[in-house]
Length: 165
Image (cartoon, rainbow, N blue to C red; front, side, top):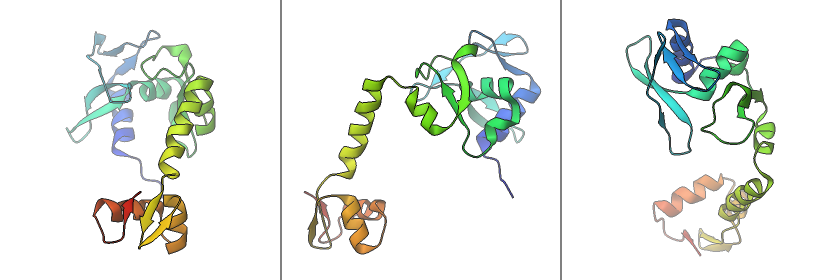
């Protein structure tokens, strides 16, 4: 059985009670503009009370995608994309659905490369794990048969014989 997230349930409720995104990316409730804020990644969101009366932050791009595409945005593997790669640009023509791979390809090639280099730099950091020196978290994790996050956690907890090099 599929269980929908709190945010997705709140998004559906918000749409049901009248929250709408204009073609220009403004959020209206009962034809009155709503104040937006932005998360640390630059995504615009609006605060909405869900069916339980709890306040939930709804990402504007997902609310707009629900207006455009309906329930399919909740399917496995479906990603709501900003075609120009700008998370604050929620105009109608900039929002589309696709895969996570499509979403990554929407980024500027230089930005995509910088993101990949940053992500791989965390993976390829030398580490001392269990008193043995390894070239990366991943190689240490494979040696011990655990996840690389397991190695990170041991380092964070300052276990004997575990540290960054």
